Image 1: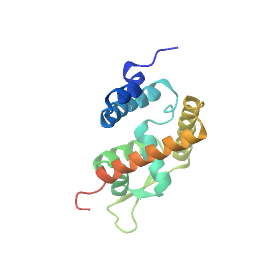
Image 2: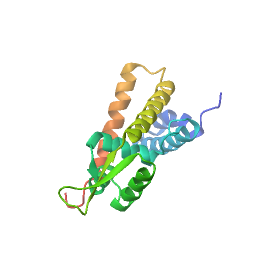
Image 3: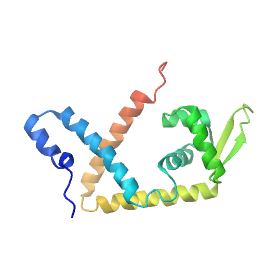
Image 4: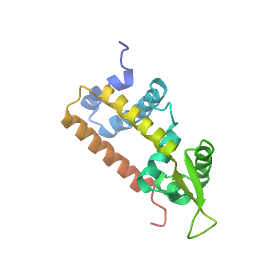
Length: 166
């Protein structure tokens, strides 16, 4: 078994020693980002789609057919970035592009059945990787972690996904 990294193994000790919660959270989020990258590289979770493709298809699955501007707002990305990602998905046959009925200059992206299938396979692999990793956690711990992580993501969205004029 590989020993845990120094940073990850010392987080609880660090909080007990310093009492500096923000210091621990800062380090914990840095380690979390690195750990997500490890999961991406060392599991088959993204064998079907890369992370950007997966998130775009998941967002379309949640929102339904949407234009690039709507997707960009939902993902906190520049419309040109979403446009490029959409073009990649279009080229792979994972989305269809059609003109907006309200404004023919705008394009609407709709996932294809193949795109939905790939998204579901990726979602299942990600869920399985989480289940394997967190298999010894209690249901209460999982709910608590999910709730706190959702709350964190909501705070980030409220802070950074809101237009400056809002």
